[in-house]
Image 1: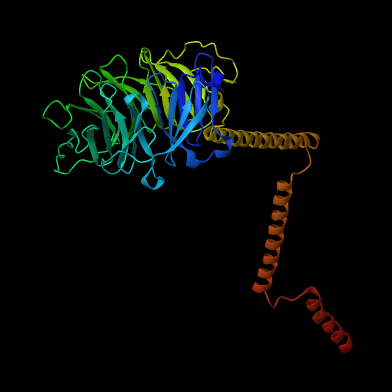
Image 2: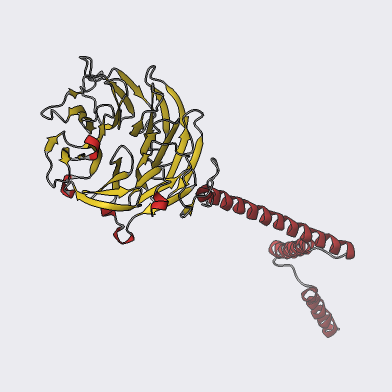
Length: 449
């Protein structure tokens, strides 16, 4: 397993509890987990290095356990319970004193400091409810920052844990004199200064300066219309990379408060975002199951790997991501995918295309029916014209009907005329009746003679 883990330069945690390692130089991806323990209870929430040499990795799970993964051996070497699942899941981890001290924080607002391998925390701090993130100051490791929903930014000195060294103040009330909501989602310490940059669930980016008396943001920038989920600072400084719930990632200028550019090719909420310590690269992961590495110079996708699981967090090695290693080639080779073409999404049939095909088929069938009817009408007309040419004296059914109607009218007229004559001369004698008196007179004259 050590041959598989040593060349990995990108580490990711998934919702199913799998620790994934990706070797960018060899285009290989590896899964490090116990297949019998895959469940939502072992979902990976946070990752951090256990030492400066980056030989061990700390993996924080939802069930409150922290696992130590050895990069050299390629296996988990230690398990430790550092939180009660009832208190919530991890929102941040950090190490102090070369890895001998561990700092953990859960979303219920309980921050604990663990020294050596003790089973009980040496320090416990209540940092407020609904904590979304805890971050460590890399230049001053004993300082951490916390924030969450309706929980403003706080900077804590773990050597003096009684109260925070800085507590941010909310924005001024709006034009209706109503309090503005505040929801810190992620933060980072700006190197070379005491400033802290945060992103909020209301698509805002704030910059605070604890060295000044002002506790409100010294800079406020808005980006997009959707909640921001994570941020990271490039090695060049002067800018910040932010990602939101709709898969949009952009570079913002911290001096002028402008958007320098946006990254393309993402979809789904961005869960993890980190800029490389020395190279102009930024890695991102999220719900679309892809690891993407973009260039900060031209904002193009340099590497894209499909990892089959929804991803929560990622961690980059400080060495060059494309450095070759002498390790073996065992592992699953990652396909070289085009930046603009994705085989998985292209294989899916869109609903719009189906509807267009159905409407196209319906219109074609209607056209065929109309053409068929027109051809039948033409055939019937041609057949009728041929019969007329063959039998020119043959009367058509219409002519025969008109003739019968005329004959019936003539019969009715003759009958009515006869009835009228009988009505005008009811006593008119017939020729036989007129002849009878003449015969009687002749008989009478013969009798007299």
